[in-house]
Length: 388
Image: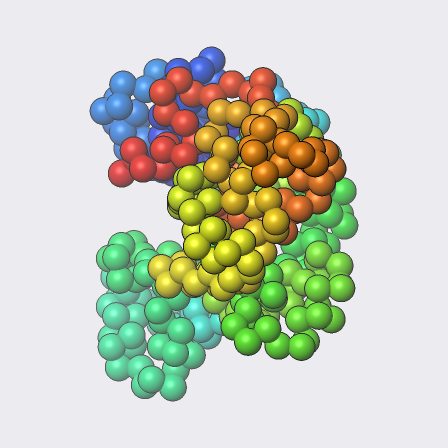
């Protein structure tokens, strides 16, 4: 694993902690010695010995002799480079053909107010102000700006300037090089220029943050029928504009389309995370008489019409993060109501698809191959809860 532009170590420590009981090797690369030292101290506190520390530029990756990586994490880095595509090419030079990258870049529409405030501060600060004066001026503007100011209108979308002090103000509103992208531009860049496959997943909300039929689920307006007939890319482009709240694009990028866990393969193990377990989900479905019902999550803004299908409650009951679909389907078939007319795998796959699509869209269901190694004693579902 490579964490490119690892900074003070958030992603590095997360990966190293989650994978400490495996033979995984994590490389933390950053240009700042001070940031690397902070990350080192965090690793010492947790007694992590599976990290290699590299003080160098992301752009130097092809010449560093680090080998090829199964996974590359690059969060909030390449959009600050003078040539972001040079950064992407450097990452691709050390990515295995079967590997994946986790990328975050800024999103254009959700940061509209940020870029207007950046333009305002460049005009106010001019060329002569030092860093301290720039930050002071920005604090004063944030206090004095009228509510009609676009940044003030959308300020609830941003926390950096509130929680991270001067560093947060500088990074959000005074950064000298800050590039943002639309969904369409990402597709043109990653897929069009480099032949990669991308899969968007917004923190805490998954793909649902981009899906028109979930963003506008209440009332089920008629226009959703036409949008759902469009290509996945077009739907995501519409969703970004419809939402207005996507301030960053986080996504996986792969060389191969089959790098993603496939639907319809009995050898995969489904895991429910960040929400109800299998039994709880089954009870919820039964409480709604196994009919479609509206799901609303006020903490994440997720909303959508959940179609559990005829067998959803039966399948969910057996999802425990251990059994693969072959095992789950076999258990369903042994239930008394299905013994007289046995269900085929195709019957169950077809019926489970709408529920699967909903759960994966909100990042509540993940899949792994049954032969994939999991960290001993700290499964995926619990890893996030153990890190501060």
